[in-house]
Image (cartoon, rainbow, N blue to C red; front, side, top):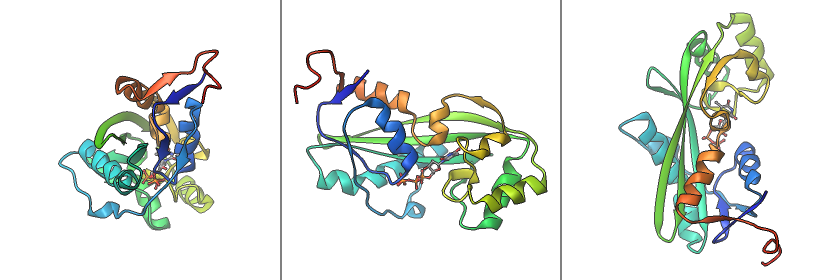
Length: 203
Ligand SMILES: Cc1cn([C@H]2C[C@H](O)[C@@H](COP(=O)(O)OP(=O)(O)OP(=O)(O)O)O2)c(=O)[nH]c1=O
């Protein structure tokens, strides 16, 4: 099953996970990124914060590619409404994991879709419950390096999966892109269509 977008599609993200998930649509796309200072972005709620960061990540790419659909996203882990982003160092990673140990946290991904001078945004929330983690586990996991490029200092799609007792919601949202929600949003905005037999090689 394949889809095509009504305009050229650009993913404004350096995340290999987002690239892999967007590929599920089977629609061609390019990756174009521009650096943004995530720390200078604010929001009055966790969902608003991730949406505002997602919007910021896509803005300059969209300005330079006005004939395209530009997609950008931001994923953060929230515990007690406090954001846990990507850890800067091993101590910060250990602190993140100690806070997540034995508790349920929320992973929110904000997604921005730029097209026709418009920016449409949505977010997806997934609840993840961790088993209680021993100090030895935390040290070994952080030493493996898996935690460093990931919000909350874990990867649910890697060996980090061994910490997860329960997931309530979209798994792909935790990995960085709620692809089912994104497909539905693109469909709602009439930016994507199913490639039916006979139209597959039309362009
Ligand atoms: C919680 C969790 C996050 N992550 C990743 C998804 C995101 O790539 C990353 C959160 O950082 P982001 O700042 O959302 O994204 P990024 O810096 O990787 O990529 P870009 O800004 O260029 O789009 O954490 C996992 O891969 N697995 C997980 O289980």
